[in-house]
Length: 72
Image (cartoon, rainbow, N blue to C red; front, top):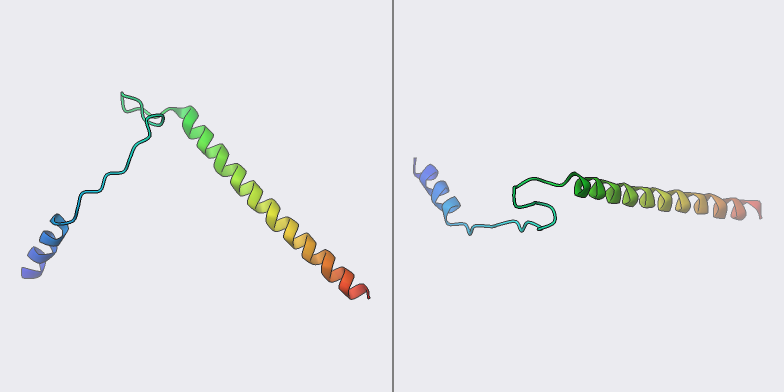
C-alpha cells in the first residue's frame, strides 16, 4: 500500500502541462475546420512524395555510378 500512495503522490506533484491550441484549428465552438485538416493531410502527402523522390533519385544515381565504374 505504501508503494501505491507514493506513486500517486509523485504523479500529483508533477507540473501541469498544457498543449497550446492554435486559434485557426479550433473555433470558439470547439469544432475543427475540415479544410484545415485536409490542408494538413496534403502537406504530409507532399512531404512523403518528396522523400520518395529523393530516395528514388539517390538509388538511380547509385546504379548509374556503379554502371559507369563497371564499364571501365
